[in-house]
Amino acid sequence: MRMIYVDEAGTSTRDAVLVVASVLVEPDSQYRVLEKKLGEIADERVPSQIRKGFHFHAKELFNGGKQFSRDEWAFPDRLATLKAILNLIRDHAIPVAFAASLKQVDWSTVIAGLKEKRITPEKWDHAIAFSQAMVKADLFLRKYLSGSEIGVVVAEDVTDRRELLRRVGLFARQAPYVLMPDQQHASSQDQAIGRSPPPSWIRIDHIVDDPHFMPKAGGPLLGLADAAAFTLRRCLERQPLGDDLLREMLHPEDAEIFLSNEANFTSPATSWILNTRAYWGLPFPSEFR
Image 1 (tube, rainbow, N blue to C red):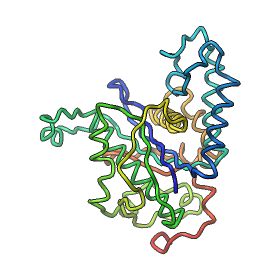
Image 2: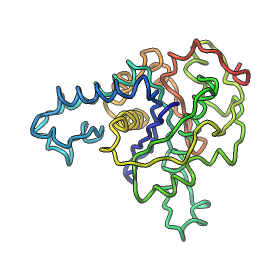
Image 3: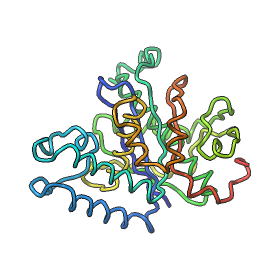
C-alpha cells in the first residue's frame, strides 16, 4: 500500500499557478523513518523559542509568517531547513505526482452552471489540479508497481474546499479516457531512453476510499507534500530560487530534464510523475511496453 499525502500551493488570487503535489510513501518501510528525520530536522534547526507546537510549512519557512517572526529565525537558516526537508524526498526516492493549473484559464462557461453552489474559479482550479494529480498518483501505482498496491489519499483539510475536492478529486474512477502520445509529457524515463510516451489511460482504479482530510499539524508527512507543492509552484512561476529548490528535491538528472521542459498549459492542468528512477528496473505491465 502507498499513503498518498497531498497538499497545494498557489491558492492566493495573486498567484499565477496553482499546484497540487502528492508524495507516495510506503508506510511500513518509510513512514517511521521519515517521521523521525522530520523530527530531527526540527530539533536541530528550529529555534527553541518557537519549537513548541511547530509544524513545517514551506511558505512560512521561506517568507517568515504567523508561527514566528523573521527576527527570530534568519532567512539562510530557514532556507537550509526547507532544503533539508526537500532532501528527504530526493534521498528516499519518494515519488511525487503533481498537477499545476494556470489560473488564467477562463472557466466562465463551466462556472456559469456552478455559481449557485458558490464555486469560484480559484476553487475550480484547485479541484482540477487535485484530480489530475490523483490520476498521476494512480498511474504510478499501475505503471511502476504493476498495479500490485493500492493507494490511500490523505490531504490537508481546507474546510471550504473539502466537499468539492471529495466530489471532483477522483472523477476518473467514473469517467476514464485515453490520452494519445502528442497529448502527454514524456516521463523522465521516456526522455532518458528516447522513447515517446505510449497511449495512457486517464483513470483511477488503484486509489481506494474517498480522500481523507486532516490539518497539517495532524500528519507530519503532509509537510513533505507541502514542500513539494511550494517548490514546484515557485519553479513553474520562474520565481527566485525555484530551480535551486527543485534540484534539492530531485535526482540531479531528473531535475535538469524537468527544468528543460516547458509546462504545457494547453489543457486545464499540466501534470507529471517525478522521482521514479528507483523503480525503472521493475517490469512494466503490458500496456506500458
